[in-house]
Every structure is written in C-alpha cells, then in structure tokens.
Length: 304
Image (cartoon, rainbow, N blue to C red; front, side, top):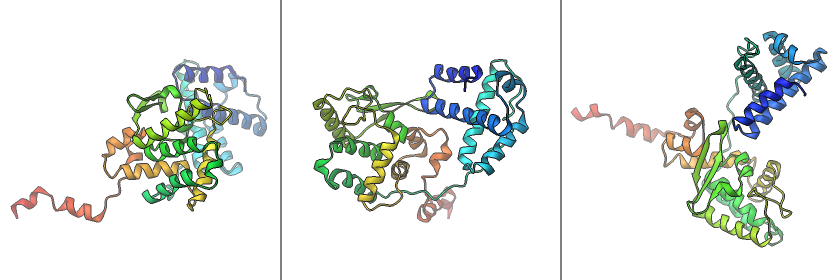
C-alpha cells in the first residue's frame, strides 16, 4: 500500500499522538479495502481514484462482500467502515475532496453477548493458580506473572494497557500508573498495596537479572512480551484453576462489577477510561430490594 494519501493520513494520526493500536487498525483496514478493489474489481488504486472514483455504492458493495463472502463479524465490518469514514473525513479536512462516500453507510448491530463475569472467589482461585500452580519453583517468570494477574485483577486494565506498560509510566512514590488512553487522553490510576508488593518483587527480580527493557513486562531474555503471550498465560492458569472460557477481558469485567458495588457510575467511568457512560452503566445491577428501598424513600410518603 504505497498511496501517498494514506501515508499522509496515518502520519497525521501519529503527529496527534493517537495510539499505535488505532493507527494499526486504520492502516490494516485501508490495506484490505484496496486489496478488495484490486483483486475483486480489478482496479489499480491510485490517489486520483481514491479522490474521484470511490462512491457510496463502492462502500456498500464492500460492506456486502465482507459480510457474505468473507463472513466477517459485525464488529470487524464496523471497524473497517469506521476506518474508511475517518480516512475520508481527513481528506475533506485537507480540502482534497468534498464527499465522504462512507459517511451514510450504516454500521451493523452488534448483539450483546452473555459476558463472563468472574466472581470474587474465582478471581482468588485464578491468582492462587499463578502463585501456587504446578511446577511453581521451575517457572522463571512466576514473579512476573503474579504481577500481571495482580494488576489485571486489582486495576481492571485492558490487555493493550498491560502489555504497553513502561517503567517510566510507574510512579513508585505516588503509587500510580499513567496511560495514554484512546484519543490520546492521559489516564492516571493509583494501585493498591497488593499491586505494590508484587511490583516491588518484580522490580527486584529485574534488577537481579539485569533486565533493562523500557517495557515493564519482558521475557527472561529481556524481550517485550506480546498480547498473545499474556492471553496464553490467562488460558493456562484459568485451566489450572478449573475455570472455563476466561479471557483478559473477563478479569476486567470482574473488576468493574466488583468496583461498581462501592463507587458511582461516574467514578467507575473515570477509573476504567470508558468514553461512554453507557459502557459503565451495564455493571450496575439494581436488585428488587434496592428498588423497593428507593420507592419507600419517596418524600411524598411523609404525609401519610
């Protein structure tokens, strides 16, 4: 993909300090769209073609192709459409075109799945599996893994946030971690004494082995760990704990659900870095007893 327009678009997002994850998603989505035009429509995509020839029907056909021919999920298709919308929004802002052919292409409805919420006891089982699992004394990454799971369970971080943690993101004095979240927003969150204890153990472990990588979580060879490696760790230890279908997001859900019991929706939204309050509100499950309690507190009842 050598189109100068795309290069300029991605460079603009880098300049504006957008996350690498966002930039990668846009790049890959545009690459797949142009590949579709070349292989399925026999079109050689040039900058001129991008500006003058792509229209709403082109995008509609691509959406149908992704749905029927590629059998993409609604979430994947929506991601591709959003990338195209953002690309053409950029071209309009630059004065290169007046039309966004993807603007009025509707996104697909994503059905809400029954999400796996770990209970407090299940979270403890998972942490116990990491600390005392099979062949614990033979695992050179045990101290690192304890910290990974302790942070996941006690701070509810996204997988990308855990993997992306750097040493200079951590303020040992104030006991906080800093993240450049979505849309380049800075989010500073505190960590508790359990995380502090695990973190100190791991930093000492790194020092003893002269591990100098700027990223917090590394292998024994001082190589930055990947998302896939963390996902494999969750799968491994959840099986040891006797838990089914657990993912990193399951642990995040558990943290949200537990924290919602003693915080407001606004507070939880800030802690989790949710852009929309609707994302946060699903963790507030009002019981019939609580609804009755609220009903019985109506001021109009005072005259009765």
